[in-house]
Each structure stands twice: as structure tokens, then as C-alpha cells.
Length: 301
Image (tube, rainbow, N blue to C red; front, side, top):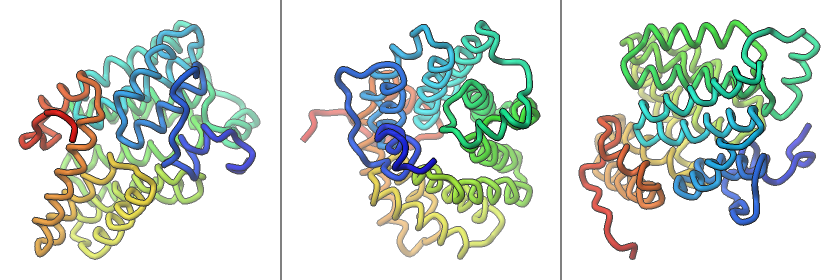
């Protein structure tokens, strides 16, 4: 199924149009969740949170889990791994209460899910499990992260988004453990899966993850190429949350342009924080992962 066969909201969230401005009034359910994915990818976290909370609290357990995993990802992007953990756990509980956690699907069902849009119960299960693994990495619980990746990957039926995210998280575990060489294979697997996917945003992030891994292995040229491509795509499509980390890494890889990269990263992060909700801003300020020391929230100009 191509982007042209899916609704515009899906194409913005997971396809070729991540820079589109989604409807924010009079939407609910699936449309609200897709809009929140798109808004978060643009760094408009407050708008995303306002749309996604009613879905998290709604009656559909699959949509609730997908929405909880989405808000958790936004919290993680602002350094709030503990807050994200609570949301991912909430999503897992919603699936468990509906009897949608255990059990592996038939090969026929797995093929159908891979051909679908990646928003079914198995995709939601993978989202929350891989989210919990990413939360554990940020909290320094690497053994727990490895176990969660193993649980999620054992089912093998989370769809194409899970394939990409599994590679990211597996690479991040190895980086956190100080093993950049071991991170290269899952990072390359994620990038390859993202190239086969319809998602501009997930491919750009896969390039960032691979670039960071290559920097860790000493492949400076490869790292610069991947991260520069991510940065270019993030500028083209308005994906501000990918800009500031890309520029921070490039500041180390291109010392002759370090001041330029850091200044631009500060501007990008300032924009993200000004569009975050109060909870998100507080998480970023308290986080050791987000460089917020120069941020001072004053009147927008």
C-alpha cells in the first residue's frame, strides 16, 4: 500500500509528508493519535500532548497503547525517561487488560500485519516494549533493556516500524554499554529497514543513530555523511527534534565549525522548548541529557 492509498494523516505521521500541519480541532481517536505523532516529530510537543491524552484515556486499548507510547517518546526526547516509563507501562497495562499481550500470530497474520499500516495490536505491543527498553537505557538499566528487547523481538510480528525501532534501541544499548562496534550491526539493520519503509522521519532518525554509532567506531567520514543527511532532511521537512542532536554531534566531528553548530543547536532546542508543555519543559530542565542551561522562557518574540 503506497502513501497515495492512505489518508493524509498517516502520510504525515509515518510517510512522506512529515512537515504537514495536521488538523488539531475536532479530531479524536485514530486521527488525533496520528496528528500527535506528526506534531511531536515537528517538536510541537504541547499541541501533541493536548491531542493525545484523550486517546490514552479512551476506550480503545490498542489506540490507547499507541498513544501512550507516542507521548512516552516525546517525553524521552526531552530527557524524561522516568516519566516515559510510566506512560509505556500504562500502554502495556491497557493491552494486557484487553488480553492483547501474549500469543504469537500465525505466519499468514504476520505477513498481513507487515503489509498493513503498522497500527494494530502487535505494533502497539512492540511500541510499548521497545519504549520501555529505551526508558531503561536512559535510566541506566541496561540488563533490563536487553531483556525487554529480547521479549519484543521473540514475537517478531510488530511490523515494519518495530523492525526499525528494534535496531535503534539495540544499538543504543551497546553504545551505553561502551561497545560501539557491537552497535553497528543493529544500527545498519535499522537504516536498511527504514530505507525500505515509507517514512521520511524514521529514515532520518535512523541516519542519526547510525552516524552516532559510526562516530563511536572512529569512522568520522561516515558519521559526518549520515548525520549531515539527517540534518538536511530535518531542515527540509521541519523535524526540529532531530536538528539539535544532529548539530551537537557534528560540533564534535567538525571542530572547525563547532561554534556554528552549537549556536544553531541552541536555537533549535530553544524552539522545541518553547513549543513544549510545562511538564515537558520541566523534564528537559531536570534532565542530564538535554543541554538547557542557556534556556530562559520569556515572552515569545
